[in-house]
Length: 75
Image 1 (spheres, one colour):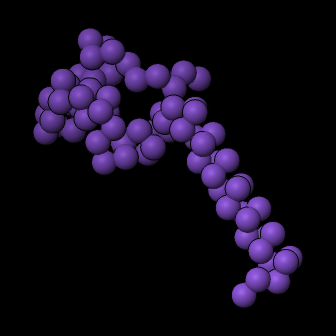
Image 2 (cartoon, one colour; image 1 turned 135 degrees about the vertical axis):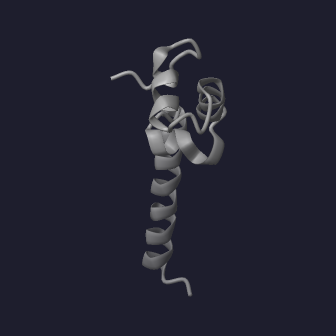
Image 3 (tube, helix red, strand yellow; image 1 turned 180 degrees about the vertical axis):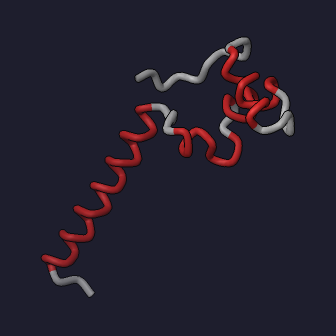
């Protein structure tokens, strides 16, 4: 499964605009998704892999720091 955003000329943008009863144009939809407005890339699952990996590493590091401080008895 590809996680890339389709080009602006792809029919998917017209289909989505029709689905939304023309409330937003196909070009506006493409820009909205391409520019990542309102965390739409996260909602659609198209975040860059490196961003997802960084988030995972950060969470793991925070968990390790919390467990280390608990073991040493700080606080």
